[in-house]
Length: 163
Image (cartoon, rainbow, N blue to C red):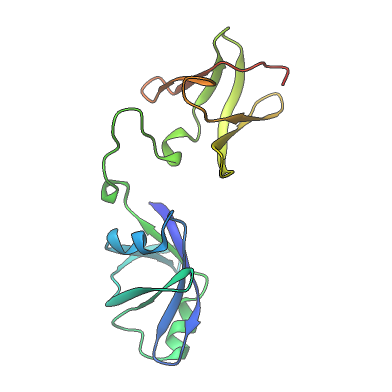
């Protein structure tokens, strides 16, 4: 399961919910149906009856959620989808999830560590690499990132290990 959002809070009194989307555009979350809500230690499939953009976020309503109390009971619930629901990537495109855990090695074969997570900075994404220490490596194709080999579990970088 890939967590793609979270139910934030009730919206109004008729069972609507505010959703915090972890997608680039909040409305994209409505394209990945069905959703799976993490409740009681397990994932339960649920599909919104209706959803729409509201401000910078998203509001939705589920079939069995008809009032504010029912909506409040879902607050804080993670929303996930199955990996197979995502569109296939093109050549040299990667989902962040695919990069997490890959070993990062310099062009001089110095192992820097593994990708722990990524940061979005606006200018470019940044790999947070944890090894003997934490390093921030910008994901700049051809300049810094020389090769990504998902099958081998490795990212080859042109990066000074002392930096």
